[in-house]
Length: 503
Image 1: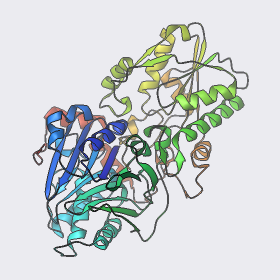
Image 2 (image 1 turned 120 degrees about the vertical axis):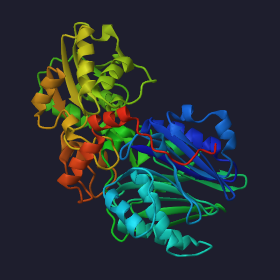
Image 3 (image 1 turned 135 degrees about the vertical axis):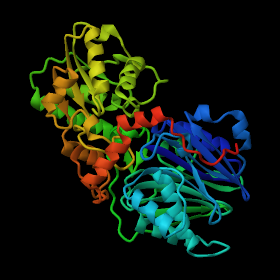
Image 4 (image 1 turned 90 degrees about the vertical axis):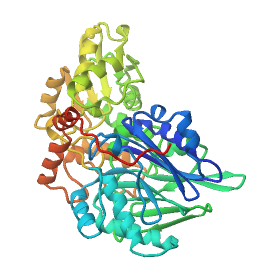
């Protein structure tokens, strides 16, 4: 999972890019990068770490220019090396930099084609570098010294023909502008907006609308599936549909967990979607447990708060904040290794004893992935004095690997794989467990956007919308991205060497 941003303005963009990445930090806490363009000169700074740790004053002062792109990441495909921090850069044609959110499912095939047919060298294991080189090759086919707007759109059409999987991308073309595009199914989110300035209109693209809000940009629209939006250096916006066949299939996990609640994605308010998840979950509990003895509803901060509050209101039960969150601990389900995840849960949350003592507590979470957080929190609730601990998940059980840009590569590490709902409840130590129904989740999220043909629900159903995910692919993904594989790479200290930072 990653966050991307691109800005073309009438003044320096370094601070705006930094601020935008800070707002999108929840989408990636492993690495960050910014590249800006000042005439024909590019200025790059990227490294592992949080935005605030990667960029210091000396770096920001060197990021000159009125257009640029930025990226924050969790590693999904490739390794966790600083060399794979984005944006990536290729010098031909024109000098192109790219940042990508998603995952290409045919990256290995494309890598072979790039080497054997396109005569391009790929220096890392990142599928984002593959995507960049495919785009660069398609653009180079025009063979022009001076590029036209239509050339960019034709190149992106070529990308759509060759690439499979999920990709929301933003690319800076030196001396020309910033182009943003989205895969033909629109799996990963991408929006764009405009801000009036004294010298003309500034344009911005980002993974979530909240980044636009914070920087004073008005949301124009989502980049549609298969569409490209190109903002030229003179501040003019061009857009074009570049895919022959499209379907709107956004990832439903964005609304469950990944996105901020104050974002609007594909014209759907994440906040309202989570309210409706709470409504649906309350109805299921009332149906299954009409004689429940729940005394209090307590959310597991932060993403479950909205659903939990609505659930409590519908059931007529007291809602209380029983856990205090340490906001300096990152998202635990993406952390490498069970031991680190367990330790981090205890560091991240602390129970308020008086909200638990001698009470029957219903804990509400957005989802259960590996079960580490859930089991640890149930233990904490019992240690704080709870008589009984019930558990409700605002999402169905996560049983399948995610291949479209979220780091859930190994089904063996998912607690619900091969277990019934009751067995999952026993495994995490709950007195009883209730999961959201799949149909209810789809209804809750998609109620206000009838243009969405289907959601990518692959983590819950195992149905992959791109139709090209085989068992062999899943096995290969598991072998390269499981906890054991990542630990082996870290132990070997295999660091890929990339281009040098100029900032």
